Each structure stands twice: as structure tokens, then as C-alpha cells.
Image (tube, rainbow, N blue to C red; front, side, top):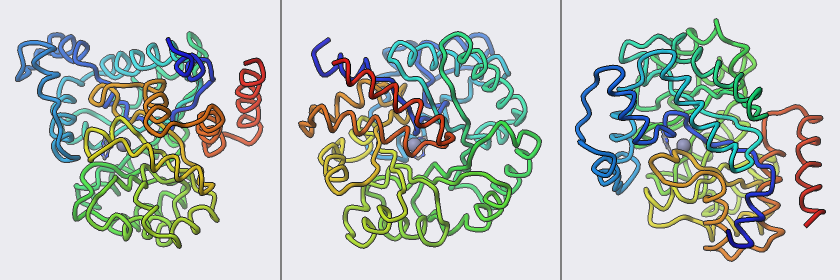
Length: 337
Ligand code: ADE
Ligand code: ZN
């Protein structure tokens, strides 16, 4: 490990933009396919990896949804989440707010309860075994009808205490934030925190960002790099203290670059930008690799790396006391360097 990798690895870290289904590594995918008698269109891990040459968000989503067909039982979801927790324990990630996509499973005939119970059991065991705390964010698939999102919000009511917030993901083209305004108003009234993907370099990215901020009133923005194209938007995001969860390695796969320079610009402008891994089994790299990528490509100073790490705790959906306690742990490590 070089010096920057050592610094990044040694800092206690929070991850705020992580799709649990996007952590399904090829090896586990084959294992679950065999366990559940599901046919995969690949003969080997290498062949599967070779198919992961995405040009944009839609071409990634094809592989992402195809991969999920092996997830059928509560144990499958448990094994998926435990594999992720095991990996990030080795990187000193201590807190996670992770997305799950219930509609990607209920539309295949897998019960909402099966999905969330398996993940919940893994969250509990990860806290016991690795001291990793986590909270769940339920994402609606924006390329499905609003009625389906509303039905999913209803299904979640039985598990209200297991879910901290709601998000919006999948294909953004022709699926603007405003399409889901009513569902998000309803979610807010039920006490959920709100976030939405504003993926990078989409058609009408800036319009979508304004909808997120002004019409929906989100608590955080996932990605949101294109905000830099509009000074007023930058000012409004900053005034509201909204965090942005940027994912450099993911960006490198589905856009023309990792957007690390933009991450530095956001820091320079005082925006609460964070670095995350998105779908690390598909865009190879967990938290450490993503932070190291941003550091290398934008030549970030140690202070800037530490600010990225601190920002994640600051904009997390933890209590103020818990935030302070994690931030003190970061400061202790920095102080000891
Ligand atoms: N689903 C999983 N990862 C996603 C991403 N980065 N953008 C939109 N939908 C997603
Ligand atoms: Zn994402």
C-alpha cells in the first residue's frame, strides 16, 4: 500500500451511496445460480466480467437486473449483504446507508418481506461481527409507473422502522424527479428521509436537479455532479446544506470520466460532497479504491481527502450525537498521523 492508500484505509469511513444488489460479485452470482437452479448466460467468471463493458447507464442496468435473477430466498439476500459487509470491514468502513430495490424483486415474484428480512438479518450480524452500523434506503425504480412506487411504499409500512429513507434510481431518461412528486410527499409525511439519483450527464440533468431541490425538497442528492453547470443551483444546494453522493469509479464506466476534478471543484465551492462506490461488483472498487481514485485524478491533498470522509458523516442520517462520535474517531486518526 502506498501512503495515500494507507491514509484512506486507516480512516473510519461512511458509505452513503451503495446499491446492495450492485455488490453481487460474479463468484457469488454463480454460487447462487447453482443453489437456485438458475441458468446464467455465461460459462465463467471471466466471461461474465468481460460482458461488463458498459457505455452508459442503460447498458449497465441490463446487466444489473439480469444479475438479480439469482436472488430468490431470504438466505440469498443475507449472503449478498454479508459478503458486502465482510469486504468493507477490511477497509475500515464503519457506517453504511444502503439502497435496496424492492420492485426489482417483487416484479419477479419475490416477496418484499423475503428481501428485507434477509438484508436486516445481515445488518444485525454485521454490527455484531464487524461493528459496522447500517441503515436501509428503499429506492423506487423510476422507469416503472408511479402506481408501482405507491404500492411499494404501502408494502414498506409493515417494516417502517427498518427503513430510514426513500430514494429514486434506475433509468433517468424521460423519468424526471417530478414524476414521483406525490409518492415522495407521501413518504415525507410518513417520516422517511428523501434522496434521489440525479445521474451524471443525463438529458436535462440541471432541470432534474432543480426539481429535486425545489419541487421535492430532498434531504440529499445522489450523484448531482451536473449542478456545477448552474451557479444558482450550486448556491441553493450549499444554502440548504445538501450532501452529494458522488461515485468516481462508477462515473468512469457510464460517463466520459470519473469526475474527480468536479469533486475537487465541489470541495472548493464548499459543497458537502462525498465519495462512494455505487455498484462495486460492476464498477470494480469499494470505498478505499474510490477515494484513492478521486485523490489521484484530482491530486487531492490529505486535508481534502479527510474532508470528503468527514462530509459523509456530516450529511448522514445519524443523530447529531452519533455524527459527532464518528467525526471524533476520524479526527483521532488524523491527529495520530
Ligand atoms: N441502480 C443501481 N445503480 C444505479 C445508478 N448508479 N444509477 C441509477 N440506477 C441505479
Ligand atoms: Zn446509484
